[in-house]
Amino acid sequence: MRPPVIVNSKTMQGTGQLPKFKEDLFKLEGLDAYLIPTAEVPVTNFYQDEIIDVTKPIMFTAFTPCFRAEAGSGGRDMRGLIRAHQFNKVELVKLVSHKDLKSEFEKTVLDAKSILELLELPFRELQLCSGDLGFSSEETIDLEV
Image: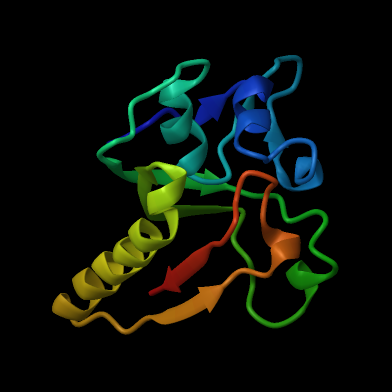
């Protein structure tokens, strides 16, 4: 899926990006619009204001450019590797029932690792700390290639 890269503030709030990460976002001047920091934002908002049936997981794979200012990064832009403000990212997103959350999360991580291993791409697994998560996220694991 190639979702839109420009979304409104309601969409950013629904995924926990606003208000917490406001300093790290690129806002379009004069508009109620932002460049996406992650594909999760537009993908999960396809079902905004809907009650959906998740007896079976609803699965998406998205590829988007992502945009992050990293303004509130506590100096990350100034030390070590140069951090890009725009980068491409592939994301696996599942909408699931709360009872299936943990097992589906684990399956998704294993699926992503399997793909990278089959492609013989070296990667590292990072578990984001709670301070880097939006209110709507319980756990996030990044696989960096």
